Length: 617
Image (cartoon, rainbow, N blue to C red; front, side, top):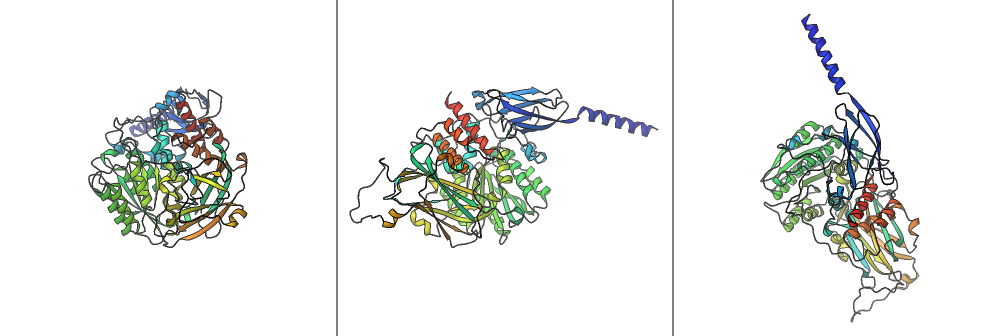
């Protein structure tokens, strides 16, 4: 009898406990108090927890809460944070007021909690639905002594076609600059000028170029219109579309996670976020893929041998146990990671080291030149490199950019869990699977159509003209489904504008061919590329006719890319920015937002508006 009474009491207690913690779903819309417009990308956080979501493109949100968790925090860049007690209501609409001060209060990384004694206890994002990932307010203190490092960028000038008919550069699919400057703006700061790489800002976004046909790994799209910031000039838009390969058709992967666990990674926006990012990646992997984990601090070591991705729990456990401490033996770590990748090399597969760090190498091989030589040697083994940057204060952007460039790979900066999802989930194929390497572009301008030209961005991707035909010269890689966009500002041939020139040559005479005057071509675009395992390049040529269309008749691709480039010019305070304003950029981008399924373009517009608020303070 006592046994049944005990069971009865236990059931009553369970039912009572269940009632106290009854879960229910709250929905609502977040709008701007100023004009009533919906606000996408607003963080909705259950107070006292790490659970939350973000609003969609229509400002709507849906969140599961339990009785006792009835206070929601609504926050967004440029708006005052609101706390709302929902009192068990299932529908809650909120209006946020604009607040310039909030720009200095919101740091978009992850996890609005002070650093715990054990870093592995900070992160349990594997249980969160990706659709409900969010940007939580970050309480991580900014170091008093900022030692972030960026390579100097000297902005491209106009070049006279008469003496510089050729323009040659390597493609760039990296997007680290965009997410890094977003981090500064989210903190209420303008980014350093040298952190702004216009080509990486433009290429952060995907564009709906036509898919390639046949066996060619990419298609080329071109457009010509008026320049938005100088009505006397023209703007050439060039787009490359990489062939989209379905995930199930991608070759098997042999990956080595090379993770920095040195003392400098002991911050919420570094190792905890890093582990969450890699957990996302592991979830995308297939049984035929393999993962090894190498870490480095005072020394380098392997914490997980190459393991089939079918054993996801084993890989996750190895990630969970990582903690930060010690100095930074980056060179030793890279050597060990490449050795393990080579030992487990998969013929006709994707062999890649994924380096995750703040870039602060200070033990062993640490100089830029030394690292460059090391990576150049290792890439000859057929192992590619992806570099993921994390953190702030001591971030070494210049080193990581060099590593990715020389390692036949790509480079991204992860400032929050949403960016991790973008790079490692949404763009899984493009980030990890190369479809063409050493991709170079060379444009020859027709002097009867063009007086001078200026390439927007790509300053550190410039090549010598003779490098175009040199198959030993390294260039950029293109991933599955990736797009690459480049733009030239053009001064028409009939312009009276003065451009830098050189004295006439004494021993040579330059003549324009008669067919140039008779041609409708403004330029000829030449492209060289190699297959991922090839050593001989292939050539593609495509002309651009001198047929200007009105700006309003151009594609969304053209206008949005122009808006992003213009924003970069304002952030760099370019001497060529003309009469650009943040308002004009926001309007141009808003009119070219297109479908914007993931909301990245709307986020860009909000970032421009935030800079406008800061500029008006």
